[in-house]
Image (tube, rainbow, N blue to C red; front, side, top):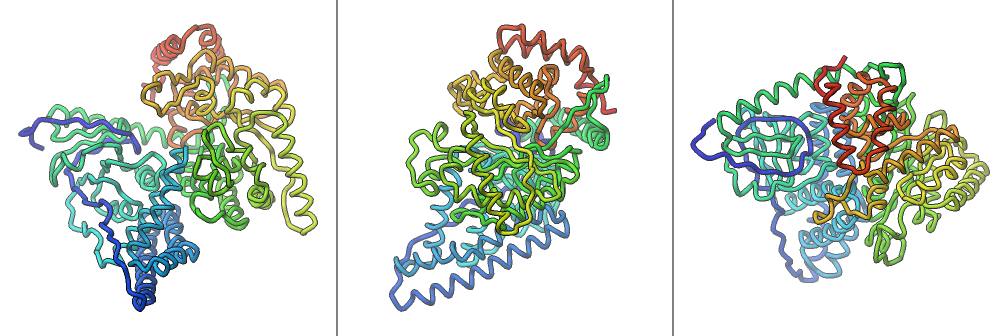
Length: 589
């Protein structure tokens, strides 16, 4: 590495943790140029034939990528490409493209481009990053199809040297799979989120990925020396010798820590004085089961079923789509429980396309349980599949966005009708699934004692609970500093919810991001929380921490935190406590 140029630091979003040092390879992968060409009447049907032939070629290419992925990366990651192959087999989607070609008499490229634009907007206008980033699949498929129509070959990177860091505007899943077969050690991207398929591939393969690096493709040329810190989302261009030494040591420490953490997979999450804690996984996709099992998750504490809608948009998933997805999930995680949250859909586009309504403020509008109860024909399909998938399995049903007791009772009445219908049909189903509600609205938190008498468990969704309680949009850069999970009001609210569940003798878990942060776990556990549902990679670190602390001291920590007046005071106290205990410095036992 050379010091001839000054180091330049770019900060973005940490997507896949780890540190990598290598030489840059820049990929030009901006969208292909697409132009509109009018067709004479006698050229329309030949154009349809050309589209169909290109579709078959693109599908064959995706299936070939899937085969390579299964051979080299495993079946779970290879399954990512099943959805893409299905998109190219979707008669509804392709018929819309063909209809546009016929009605507008335009070239196939333009028709594909316009239909893809409409579907992409459906993904990206959602209010939740988990689902807006699912447009990756569609973009990947469209890119395959346009290349097939235009006769453009994919990048040939088979001759790359060792220690390569890919720098690009974005990276689709199929590109990621092709690249990781070579000597790629990290990705640095201008776009992409933490829940994209590309991010999942990077995390599963332990490849550092930083995104949100505005302008990185203009600043880097091939063979430039680069450092990627996927944990911090930082990229250093032309690093100095001192920076190279520093990050080499960090990489060694990370490798050692990772080995120590994985060694804890089979160890129980038990405090020093014998109190067991359930560490479960949050999952969006079935592919994430691999990580959940690898890091020792004691079940799935939150499966977000919304993705089934997003994956098949503009069509609604069938009962069999639901059933196969849920059954696979519970089979893979058995004998541990799996908590499946019913649709938590919302947003202006969804309200307009699915619910036939206009939403001025979708975050406070027809979403979650409100939406599914308002359109029972959609909810009926999902509920039937849930009861079928629960036969001889430990499947729990979780209701989102509950704000009052009536909603729970309406659901129970609706569920009773569905079960009676299934009984008449002779369907095999399990009517005794545990039923829970999300505590993510302040009104639900304040009546947690009443809700606890109606359900089998509570699940605290801190992301929305904090946002609604503090009137802060954490994605708004002007007020995000006010988003404080340790605000005394939040801690008092959580304490009441935990006490309510304990009094009623029911289970309670936390599935929001607050649960994944080791800084917060001492006060949460000290207040009585015994189940955390977190990102899979957070499990070993939390388990290590739990095994080094005693519940008696954690209860004292919680009492002290609840006596403090500001979030800053609580945070400082917890940092000092963990530093005094040297928890973060100890190795896994």
